[in-house]
Image (cartoon, rainbow over all chains, first blue to last red; front, top):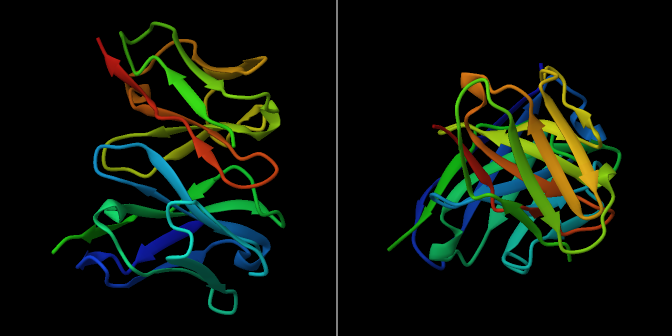
Length: 121
Length: 108
C-alpha cells in the first residue's frame, strides 16, 4: 500500500534552517508529482510547494518563495523540503502528499502523518 | 488566483441527519479541479471526493455537486465517524493550490 513517512521536524530558532524528508513506498515514486502542505496550530491547510515527477519543475506559495526549496531523489524515493530563514509563522505540522501521475497538479490522494516544525527562540 | 470560501464554519447535526457543506470559488472553476478532504483530530487529511468522483473506499453517502461557482459536499445520512473537519481544494491548471478555511462538522 502507498506509504509516505515524513521526518526532520523539530524546534529551531528564527532565522535558522531545517530540512524535512519524506520517504515514499508502495508506488512508483518517480511517476508522481509530490507536494508539501502545512497546518499551523488550530488552523487550516496551506499548500506550500510542489515538484514535478522528474524534478524539472517546482512551484511555491508566495509565503515561502525564496526561502524554501523543494527537491526529490527518485533513486531513493525521497522528497525534501529545505527551509531557510525560518520565521515564527512557519510553525506548523508539515505533510507530504502525493499528487497526480505525470502532472504537476492534481488532487492529493495520499498523505503522510506529518512532522512538527516549531520556530521559537 | 482562486479563493475558496467555505460555509458554514461549524455545522452541528445528529447522526442520521443530512449534512450539506458549501464551498464558493471567487471565480469560475471547473469541478474537475475541485476536491474535498476530511480531517479528524490528530490525523492527516484524507481525500473524500475529487474530479467529480468519490475517492477509493469512500461510501456512497458522500456526494458532490456543482452549480456555477458553488460546490457542495453532501453526506446523506451521517454516521458517527463522519464528524470531522472538511476542506475543499482547487488545484486548477497552474499553481498556487487553494484550500478553503474548513467546515467543522460536530455532533449536536
